[in-house]
Length: 102
Image (cartoon, rainbow, N blue to C red; front, side, top):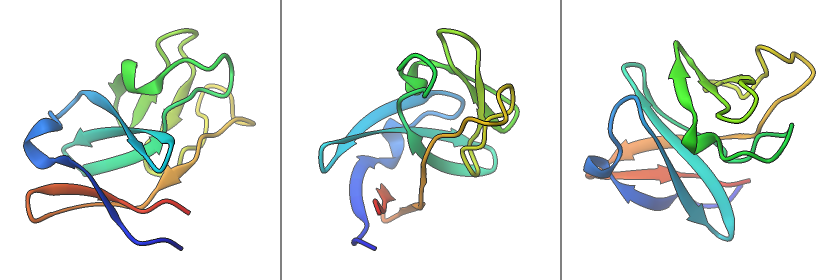
């Protein structure tokens, strides 16, 4: 596993909204909820829409294109159980958001 990478300052990630960051050439969607900060792949496997442009519904992000839902915790598809997106370890410390890519 690689070392954590600082990708955003903590104050740039608003609760309830998605933000796309790029780390080592990979696009990652970050979300802040009451449960914490989550990092998932920013591309829906159905049609390639940016999940960072979707909205939150409970502990899931809703794809803005065809409304597919993915759990933030583990990336598993809710509306389409045979689909999923990658998730990445994520932490907030020292005023920054850090993610670890595989």
